[in-house]
Amino acid sequence: MLKARVMFATITGNNEAVANIIVKAFEDAAVDVTREQIELVDPHSITKANTDILVLVPYTFDLGSIPDEALDFYDDLAEVQLPEIVYGVAGSGDDYYGKDYCTAVDTFENRLAQTGAKQGAPGVKVNLYPDQADAERLQAFVATLLGNFEN
Image (tube, rainbow, N blue to C red; front, side, top):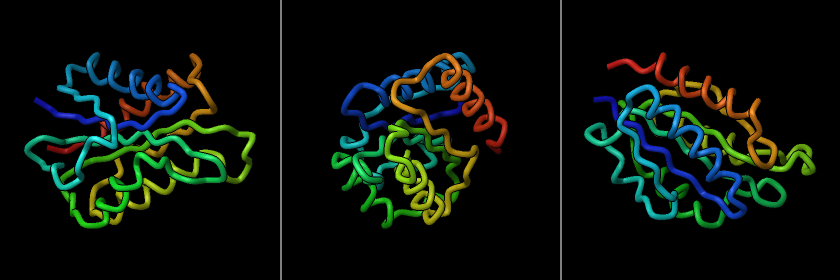
């Protein structure tokens, strides 16, 4: 069975809502999915045996920063190679911050690309709490990830 892991960081609950929509979409597609808080995961534990598709859900803090609770994970990602893993990144931010809006999504996409993992879908950026249109974009994101997964 296909295995997906959805790792999120949240401070306001917005990203937990984003993660929940993604998890539900995987469940609806009969994927074995695990939802995890990013600060509790060691990137060295991500292997083909336990992960086919990896989805990270970071929020963007202040002026384009990644979440404090995701810093260790981000740093440790530089030490791993994930060539057999398909990834996607989605996350929330506040468009009030202009050019810094949702830059954590871009930052994590770049770091995952450096691991040799294959990007399975373009990143999704959500302004604050996900609305119905965001939920539909996130469901399409999961469908694209699944469509780009190769056994």
